[in-house]
Length: 269
Image (cartoon, rainbow, N blue to C red):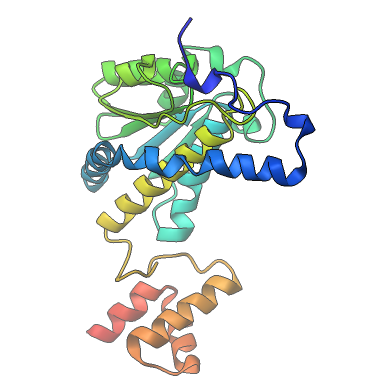
């Protein structure tokens, strides 16, 4: 049996005897260690980001594959890129063991099928232009491991985000990222520190990639989809500031062109 630090006994005893404030303070104490552990991996994350940018510039796609919490985190990250950065919806794809119904409800033993990960990737006609990132706190989830091994065998670049050392998944991929988060506050509950670490790394990867792909101007989301009043208001303010316009004129231009980037480009011609 693998020695997984994520499964080790919690540093805290008798949780049910703690006051509400003690529980919160101790969870926060554990969470405070996460960013430091992510920092140790900046070099490896940078290499993975550069590869993703290279692949996507050539028309490739970014795939996240995971089970349970890890799978849901990948789906969240992928699904946020189109509205936030204007990325085409099929360029970043999150896949979870058990399919879409597993997003809301656990599908028993779905993560234990070593063949299904690759089958799910094949559903998207995955090819050598693409890149697959496996997300697994344990570093050994069969669904993820099988998908990554078959991807690599077929000449597809692979990476991972895991939270244990010397894991089978990290050994199987081209670009391993290992964020060692240690024992959880609730023993084995990797939705906590491990999940937070994975979310931090996913935020860093996708945001960096989108910036490098030109989806940001200055520090503004000029390609965001104007899908609600809050985002429309944000877009109007961007146009007002960038072009030194009054609100009414900025609003009219945004309605005419449909997004901030096209408004700015129209005024630079």
